[in-house]
Length: 226
Ligand code: SAH
Ligand code: MG
Image 1 (tube, helix red, strand yellow):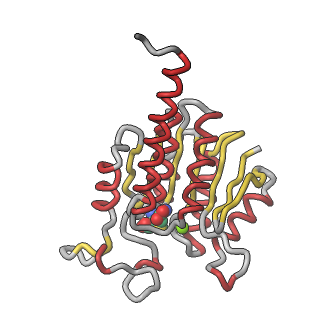
Image 2: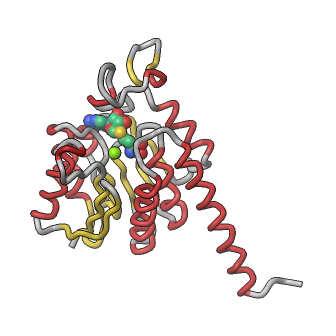
């Protein structure tokens, strides 16, 4: 007997939910800097963008080993968007030897430099996200200065120093379409909790009059372009 439309759609829902749950489990297990609840909030924000702008383009700055990429990739796959995931994969200042967020396992012994690209790549292969996630390996301002694709969702989580954060703000936010979303990570209103630049660029986005608040979770801030 052929399934009824209702049965077929219930089955499709179950398949989608199972796939989503699998990706969330993978994202949680991936090395990185994103608490579970913030990751879910990121996924949900991107899914809204994907639903509202079919066939849209997402971009993340700051991929590291693919944790946020997996959350965003789940939203891209589910909604038919494509995610460009940008990183030079050499780590930010705070990831280098002697800093708080250094992980010696991520140093490539032949170059002596951090190289998260193999980890990111393995995460995408194991999650089977290569059809909708495209890695861009390079310096964020170099890429943004040549970029022309309108973005329905942009996630900024790259270098958190003054210069890199402002370069990401200036280089990427103009590409967010009207009705598109901008998410910024590591926004800490209290300086005791973390560095200023992500907070400052979040304030600048709000102050520009081009973005309005559209949700938050922990240090994640979600904005929508008016
Ligand atoms: N979103 C990640 C964490 C990103 S950490 C997660 O979910 O775990 C910040 C990343 O920004 C690092 O991988 C670092 O290599 C990258 N980065 C810093 N400055 C950059 C630049 N100028 N261009 C490209 N990537 C940069
Ligand atoms: Mg972060």
